[in-house]
Length: 386
Ligand SMILES: Nc1ncnc2c1ncn2[C@@H]1O[C@H](COP(=O)(O)OP(=O)(O)OP(=O)(O)O)[C@@H](O)[C@H]1O
Image (cartoon, rainbow, N blue to C red):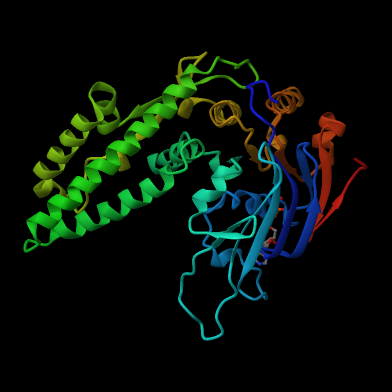
């Protein structure tokens, strides 16, 4: 059990075929954090990307499923793992079938298997495993475009509400349909009304789920210190504001009315100007009362780590299971004190954190509290006895 009363969930085995630079990999693991050390291009990120695909969505690089297939392979790939948790061992897997010889359809969907049974949706994976991550690509989160922060936020929501991903995709599809319809002066008004009703329903649900997540994170007893300072989050968005002020039904009605009255304006703009697809997440360094976007590079990294650790605690508390935490090249950016602090936080969470780095010395301080592996050209071997 972790400090948050969650049961430990971890991978006891993982196997890959034809995934990125791995022709074949089969790895046995125990419950401890996993350290992957290797040179640039060895396959460290590829391996944690494989782990990230054991959750709903497109994984930590948001790659297309075709791009994951090993060059020179069959065009297909598989990732499977044994999850140990309160339900006992569960074998979960995902993959893409080999490309058909005739070229076949351009986009193929990935398969999901749980204990040998085919599942229709990747949401099923979330019943057994939660996977969170922090990658170098997220370094510019506070200064980058709002779209990146929305995606980050929606990923945080997805970890506690598996239906959120489908909701966001359906909303985006409906928006694209509305944008096409408002351009067409001959479009059927009833059809447009129906699409806007759908947008209002989905958009209000998205805004409410985001608001709830931000509220839950704020309620967590602060565990922040000078190593990983606390971040204050707030949502900037009309619909997110409404769901805080009125009932969901009233917010939905207000959103639908706003869409209907905004048709001419949106036609002129060529896009829908109201809705949670326009919201932003504001992050403030609590102790300094300073917007995260104005913090130093190191401060931003520490804030982001603090945020991801707080989220991991929240997921553990709400799902009663520890999520896996994938941290790509995190240790390299931290000074010795912060690195030790990170390892201590991971130990307190009781999570099987996967950490990568190019230098084994970065992981000296975690010692035998982790299992260490060397990654070299798509091969992985244990670095020290368990
Ligand atoms: N579909 C693919 N087929 C074969 N090789 C691939 C495929 N996709 C990526 N690679 C290769 O996999 C290698 C390892 O990439 P990865 O990102 O895992 O490296 P890394 O160990 O994390 O390195 P770094 O320390 O530089 O981040 C790269 O050389 C990349 O070109």
